[in-house]
Image (cartoon, rainbow, N blue to C red):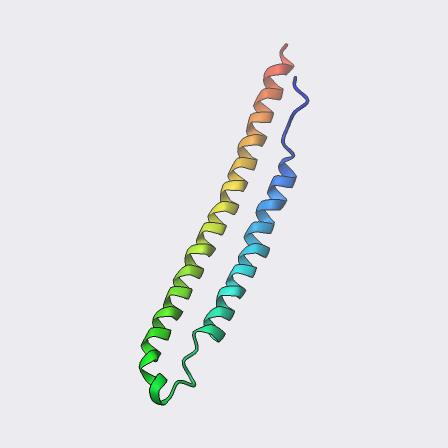
Length: 100
């Protein structure tokens, strides 16, 4: 049997890292952008008409965060599925070669 293989535990750890650390960083970054970059609270006088634009931008930031978070969670789930496939394939191959 070939010496090549996949360390499924490392793959699983990376999936966990993507799901927890990276998603948390993305959510934090978007939340800060929305809180500090899209806050029209101080808009008065001539800037008052810009409030709806800033609210629209804040909505886009939220939508971007939701999309990115969903994609990262799907990536993590895909990595876990690949890990499980590799484990099953390795198990099936080991079982097949035992008979030889």
